[in-house]
Length: 264
Image 1: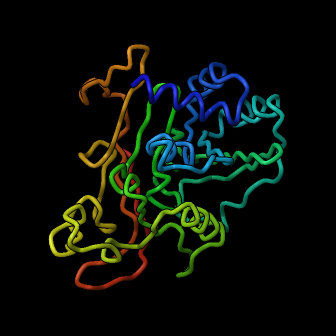
Image 2 (image 1 turned 60 degrees about the horizontal axis):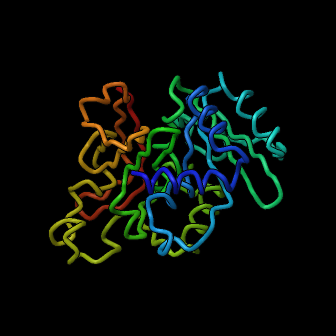
């Protein structure tokens, strides 16, 4: 785990001057980092040759001003408020978005309308960003897919039967980095046993199946001072989150449906 902690510090240092203080901010506000930084952390430095210039943060409204104040001291400027009503489904757990910039670096703050800051992670544009990083924890919902440079699109990118512009822009950015995105695994090699026998999608990668944040398909690593990886039963404070990607694929059908999210 020493490599993961060191790699995390390198990635955080792209955006903040003092990583230790940034870790303290994440602990104090329960904010989580998501997006390109987490993807970089999962992949090797060789395979992920691009440098992330965007940082995603999920926070609760209670801690929003503390996080913005910290980033403003780092030289970031609030460039524009977001418009979650136009960018997400009416059932989205995203309350709003705030955009900050500093030279070529951008930070997008996603505000959760639930008590836990991590909830919006599971309703973002694709499986590539269904991950989060804190001062002490690294979580990835689809590590095998991401490691193969593949991702499934979240049905939340659909509004009134069409992809929202913000989702399209972000998906294009990942495709330019070499990732292959699809709405189901039939687009990939059906002979690859990763996706199921003869293209059957009734597995962890089926977009219409329910997944859970504590199932066998997730990667969860706690990074304490010793780098020890705890047993699952030691992490009873983790919320159990269940979701689907919102695509109906059974019986050859392929239609967009409302993604679903439950916190237990």
